[in-house]
Length: 176
Image (cartoon, rainbow, N blue to C red; front, side):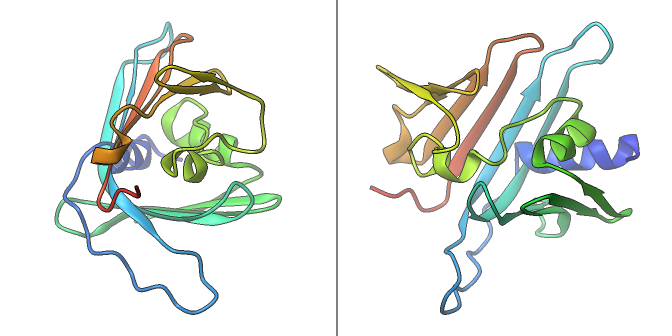
């Protein structure tokens, strides 16, 4: 994937305006939407990176879709996944990967826990891995998921292992 596509994906993940929620069709999972930002500290081989975008997410760790939009509402990237396949569609075309980890590693230089993201945004640990509850949320997959401000729609996930990564989310419609 080109460096420009990586930057677009990263930018799409970090900041943008809220977008209207797409309608839910009968039998479809509901969309979660808001703004997301990702900051990756510099490492010995790469410079620090940061991206932000509006997002729309539906599905779970097994199958789903994540759409990233610019502040003006244009599509920057869309990731779709199902067992054994993850695709990333950008203005430069579509790329296929065996896993979501492979997709995020190629796009951002680091594997992000995209399979766990739908559960984390719902304020719960992903059922696909062990977790430990903390005073501020929980720890899972080497990440600290901070939920103290979830009622306000703010969720933060931090991976302290080098290079440190911080994912911040502001939900459009926080759940109680």
